[in-house]
Every structure is written in C-alpha cells, then in structure tokens.
Image 1: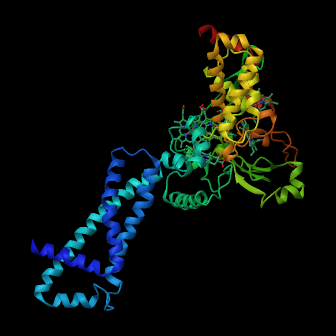
Image 2 (image 1 turned 90 degrees about the vertical axis):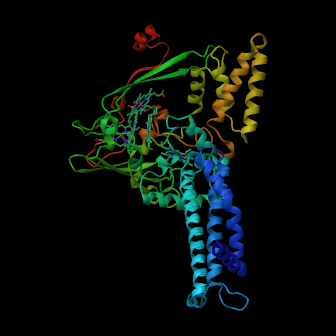
Image 3 (image 1 turned 180 degrees about the vertical axis):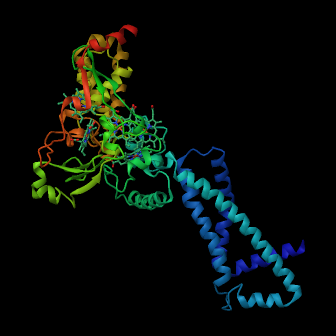
Length: 489
Ligand code: HEC
Ligand code: HEC
Ligand code: HEC
Ligand code: HEC
Ligand code: HEC
C-alpha cells in the first residue's frame, strides 16, 4: 500500500514541479465531479435546459480535455527550474537502473494508467451524451433562442414537430455529419458576433439534397391516385361566413413497384430528371428547365427572359444558379410553415381560438395583423388596443354583455400573429413563400407551369387547371359535393 501512496506522491510532486501541469491538474480536478454529475443527470433525463447542456458539453468538456493535455505536456516537455523536464527519458532510465526505484516507477505507471482509464471513461461518456445533445431539438431550436425562435415556433406547429431537426438538416452518414459540425461552428461565431442574416437566408446554404433525408421516411413511389383536400375559410362579412374549397389533388406517384410515375410526384421518379436555372437566390425566377424523362431524350423549356443578359448574368449576386429538382422545390416549407395572414386567421377561426360569433372579426383581424410592427410586444399591444377600440365603438352593447368574446378573439389574433411573424428577425407574412401551390396564380408551381416555358418545338410546361387537381368547389358555403359528409356530421 505504501507504494501506492508513494507513487501518487511522486506523481503529484511531478505535477507540482511544472506550472503547466499544475494548471492542467487544477482544471481536471475541479471539472471532473461537475462533468460526471452533469453527464449522469443528462443520462437520467433530468437535464432539460439547453444552456446547462451547452456549459457541460461545449465549455466544461473541452476544458477538461485541455486540462488533461496540459498535465501530460507539462510533465513530459516543460522545463523545471533546473532546465530539465520532470519526466525525461534520462530520468526514466536512471529510475529503471536501480531495483528499488524500479518498484516505485512501476507503481507510478500503474497510477498513471488508472487515471488514464478513468479519464478515458469519463471523456467517452460525455462525448457520447454530448453528441446526442448537439443533435437534439433543444440545442438546435432553443439554444440560440432569439435566432432560431421563428424556425422553432413554426416547426412546433407542423406535422414534423416530432422529427428531430438533424433528421432533415443532416441525415445519415459521416460526411454530412462532419459538414454539419463545421457549418455549426461557423454559425456559432455568426451568433456570437451578431453577424447572421435577419431573416435567415433560404435556400439554406449546402442543405443536403432532400431525397437523402425525406425518403428515409416517405416513399413517393408508393403514393398513387388522387386525394381529396378540403380547405375551410371564412369570408370578411358580418357573420364570418364559413366557406369551403374542395380539390381533388392528383398526388400521383413516383413510380416503381409495378406502376408508372404519374401526377404530381411524377417529378421525383427515378427515370425523370429535372434541372433548372434561376436568376435569383430565392429560386423564384426560373428561366430554363431541362427535363430528361423515361425516353432518355432531353427537352429544354425556356422563357423569353432566358435570352436576356439579365437572366444569364443573374439579377443580383453571382447567379444564375442551377439546381436539380427534388422534394423541397415544392415542399420547401414542410416544417417551417409560416402561414399567410389569411390562412393563419382561417385556422384560428376553424379551431375556435377566435370565436366566429364576433361580427366582422375576420375582416377586422386581417386589417390589424397586416400592418408592420417594430417588435412582437408592440404588435401584441396594438392588436389588443385596436380591436378593443373598434368593437367598443361599433358593437359596444355586445361587448358589454359578452366581454369574453372580444377577449378570446384578441388572444386568438395575437396567437395567429406571433406564430407567424417575428419582427425582431425581420420575418413578416411574406418573407418565406411556400412553393406548394400558386397563391394568386403566380409563384409556387407556376414558376414553371405558366404556359410560358417553351421548348424549341413549341411544347410548354402546362398551366392547365386540371393538370394537378380538379377544383370541385371554390369558396362555397356548404358545397354540394360535400353534402353527404355534412349529413353524417
Ligand atoms: C421535415 C424536415 C425538417 C425539419 C424536421 C427541420 N427542418 Fe429546418 N428546414 C427544412 C427545409 C426543407 C428548409 C428550407 C430549405 C430551403 O428552401 O433551402 C429548412 C430551413 C431552415 C432554416 C432556414 C430558414 C428558413 O426558414 O428557411 C433554419 C434556420 C432551419 N431550417 C432550422 C431548423 C431547426 C432549428 C429545426 C428543429 C427545431 C429544423 N430546422 C427542423 C427542413 C426541416
Ligand atoms: C424522421 C421521419 C421524417 C422525415 C425525415 C421527414 N418526414 Fe415528412 N412526415 C413524417 C411523419 C411522421 C409525418 C406525418 C405527420 C402527421 O400525420 O401528422 C410526415 C408528414 C409529411 C407531409 C404531410 C403533411 C401534411 O400536411 O399532412 C409531407 C408533405 C411531408 N411529411 C414531407 C416531408 C419532406 C419534404 C421531408 C424532407 C425535407 C420530410 N417530410 C422528412 C416523418 C418524416
Ligand atoms: C412537383 C412538386 C412536388 C414534388 C417534387 C414533391 N411533392 Fe410531395 N406533394 C406535392 C403536392 C402538391 C402534394 C399534395 C398537396 C399538399 O400536401 O398540400 C404532395 C403531397 C405529399 C405528401 C402527402 C401525401 C399524402 O398522401 O398525404 C408527402 C408525404 C409528400 N408529398 C412527400 C414528398 C417527398 C418525400 C418528395 C420528394 C421525394 C416529394 N413529396 C416531392 C408536391 C410535390
Ligand atoms: C422546376 C420546374 C417545375 C416546377 C416548380 C413544378 N413542375 Fe410540374 N412539371 C415540370 C415539367 C418540366 C413537367 C413535364 C412537362 C411535360 O412533360 O411536358 C412537369 C409535369 C407536371 C405534371 C404532369 C406529370 C405527368 O403525369 O406527366 C404535374 C401533375 C405537375 N407537373 C404538377 C406540379 C405541381 C403540383 C407543382 C407545384 C407544387 C409543380 N408541378 C411544380 C416542371 C416543374
Ligand atoms: C402545376 C399544378 C397546378 C396547376 C396547373 C394549377 N394548380 Fe391550382 N393548386 C395546385 C396546388 C398544388 C394547390 C394546393 C395548394 C395547397 O395545398 O394549399 C392548388 C390550389 C388551388 C386552389 C385552392 C387555393 C386555396 O387555397 O383556396 C384553387 C382554387 C386552384 N388551385 C385553382 C386553380 C386554377 C383555376 C388553375 C388554372 C388556372 C389552377 N389551379 C392550376 C396546383 C396547380
């Protein structure tokens, strides 16, 4: 036993002789219990705060490793006062020559090996949990709170709110893992030095091709046929009339498993390849589309703009850009779904967060949310004040007898606003357009399907209303086509 104490002493003496080692040893000793406790708490699921995770894994963890390195670097290389390293080669040779000392050295070695094993265990433990932490939704979505607040909020209100950020943004494989950590480090500095874009730029620089990620879970090869879509809306009249739009959507299939690619998911069939050129970074202005289909022949569709120098040089920046079409050329907002003001209010009216009994609430709400506010707090307050003063003036009696109607409406309108507009990040209703459809018959699918992209032999990318869907009813109260459904409700 004596030898062990001796060895520990010799080791500590060695450490204390080198200042570099001493600093390292202090770091390691102080951080060891904190790291162990933090890591264990995390494993037991008791650590839910993204800031603790950051301190444990991205501050204390690296410092601990630096401490370990300092201890050994100090012992092996740094000079003592008499100008020789503490544990030089010479030193070991001398020790090994005398049998008495040999025993001591053996114990020093055992002691060092024991410490090393202990350290390797803790380092692997916190690297493992730390890796999970940097892949967690809390780290991606909540740590840089004000920066990611909009994406995180929109994400939480989407069908993908249980899919981790990394499943779309990184996916499987070592190459993308490494890329993401490098780009993560760059983003970290952008946040630390406040040099990030407001709003954050889309398309995301170097986003992994969607087919590698989306197709881990979705297989458009196995979609087929049509699907009925019913959209509920409210008119800006006194009774907020409920109307419906009914579409039979030709969802189609990406082909495979014995059936042909057809309909909307025809674009992503294996045998089809669509490459397009756009003159703006946001890929709104598409001036050339090259299609190779199952026949293997390439057809090039161009707009008149394609001939102009403007398009060729790109409108601004270093464009034009070329892109292979994939899922996110249509589903660019699968999870960060920022609704339009119209859709956001319809949604709250539909779910009852905004009471439909309040006269003209659709019209009034639309008017107040459409304005630009400097901050979220100002918007919240203005929405409340402006609605209140209008209703007190126009529907004073109703508000007196049923004050809860207005209160609820105000909360619902504030919710619609705060889930979609983030003035601090310069995100307004129209900042991130959704390509899935064609608001006002432009943009979205109509970036290509506008009858104006023409091939040399006069073929166009069709804008025919029945190409993608059959409109069974448009903004109709109680559409006849849904009669059977309402009867059963
Ligand atoms: C279902 C897949 C999916 C998930 C899950 C997901 N994202 Fe995204 N994200 C995307 C796509 C697609 C884009 C837009 C890509 C484009 O158009 O370049 C995007 C864009 C972004 C952008 C750029 C700004 C914008 O809105 O266009 C940020 C920032 C972002 N995501 C962060 C996150 C964070 C943080 C999480 C987790 C809380 C997350 N994402 C989860 C698919 C996803
Ligand atoms: C880890 C699995 C996973 C990944 C990756 C994923 N999704 Fe999904 N997605 C789901 C699940 C689960 C649902 C169903 C949610 C529900 O029904 O509420 C869904 C739903 C959808 C829907 C239907 C939404 C609706 O309104 O009903 C679309 C469209 C979609 N995903 C597109 C995408 C795209 C595009 C990507 C790639 C950018 C992607 N998904 C990546 C799991 C995933
Ligand atoms: C040409 C545009 C386009 C492309 C490309 C595209 N989709 Fe779609 N997708 C649509 C439209 C339009 C719908 C139906 C309308 C809606 O969901 O609002 C749809 C529906 C879906 C749905 C819901 C299907 C259902 O039965 O409810 C999923 C999931 C989906 N797409 C996944 C994908 C994936 C994964 C890819 C890439 C491999 C992809 N899509 C490529 C336009 C596209
Ligand atoms: C980048 C350009 C581009 C965009 C954006 C685009 N498409 Fe297409 N689409 C094409 C091309 C090219 C064809 C083939 C035209 C042809 O065969 O003449 C096509 C064909 C189609 C077809 C017919 C497929 C078949 O059965 O042969 C449908 C349906 C369709 N697109 C739906 C959509 C929908 C819905 C959207 C928007 C969500 C959309 N497209 C967006 C380029 C595009
Ligand atoms: C290239 C495919 C395509 C073509 C061509 C097309 N649409 Fe659509 N349309 C869509 C998609 C996709 C949506 C669904 C958007 C969504 O899910 O919100 C849609 C939605 C609609 C809606 C419902 C919009 C709403 O939210 O109330 C109407 C109405 C409509 N289309 C009418 C037309 C008419 C009229 C034409 C012909 C001028 C046309 N569409 C041509 C793809 C197309």
